[in-house]
Image 1 (tube, rainbow, N blue to C red):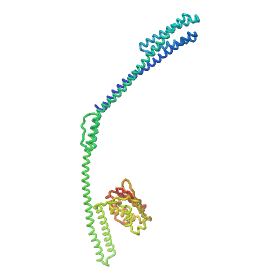
Image 2 (cartoon, rainbow, N blue to C red):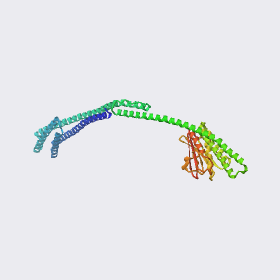
Image 3 (cartoon, helix red, strand yellow):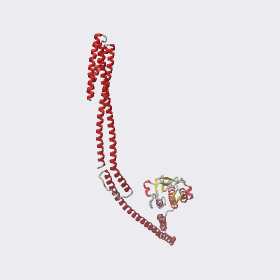
Image 4 (cartoon, rainbow, N blue to C red):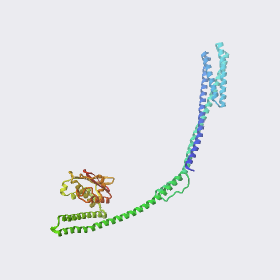
Length: 487
């Protein structure tokens, strides 16, 4: 049976029993209300009878019309109460007592009237009047006793009803508790084993056993969850298999890429190295040709031979820097603790020279130390600072600031100048090989320095970027992992 159906059945039984007990309690409370009203009516009748006794005695002692009238009035009230009691009381024994009280009331009224008439004729209590008063006394006692019996019976009935109500309430509570226990037991037996199976199966799948499958035993909600977990495990198994295939493919391609890069670096190194000999020959032949021609050579020829030698020299420089870049990929890193402030200061003094250094306001802040290859980091500082000096010379303000900070586990460093700056839209081209944003005739260089910076920083697991604005200077950043706070 499905858990929902079981719960609905248990709820239906509980509601049915609750309804039955509710009706029984309602009937019991109604009977208690009726009996309480009867008890109050019986007590009112007894009070009226006691008041009649008091008025009877007062009349016999004083013989006043007022007392006579009050006695008759109380008798009328008692008669009305008896009529109400005949409607309210349903027990035959109670109704018999009420009939006796009514008969005694009629008899006492008759005797009282005779006593009053005798008193009116004689003015004093005669022997006949004394006899009537004695009869009135006897009937008064009977009336009071009957009223007391009716009150006692009403009290007994009310007590019995109260005991019945208490029993019904106790029975309700007992049934509710029993239903709760039965429902809990049924649900516990139904769900307990299933939940334990789900727990064990979930642990197995969560632990990596994607081949696990539930043996479907039921068609209830537990079975639905087991089928869902089986479907999920199948999907995970298929996805994991696909991921494994992708990982193998990625490893294969990474290996192929590494081999290709290695071959490309070896090829570039070989080509760059092999090109240097022809360039030296071209430069040498141009010099020999100029010497052979002697003084008779024209000025245009000399200019062309100079361009040949100058171009060969520039080509030789480019080849040297290309060899440097290929060596960066082939050289193993030698990591150590590097004082970045000292490294930046040493690099500035090296690239600036005494005269240029005196012309610049060079400021170094507190820099976090780094775990890096000291020789390679020295080249990073040298390239960045030489660029800052070169592009600051045309500006009226010669100021360079070096700073750094630690953020999210990375040590970040920057070189800020107030030079010619650059258009931020082309910042992505700055670190490319042979990329230049300024004209060659305005600023010397071959566009390799920042590419070397990017290559060195990337080998350390960091990144390099730049921010600038035309005419307002530039700031070059690079970050290294494994932040080490400055001491």
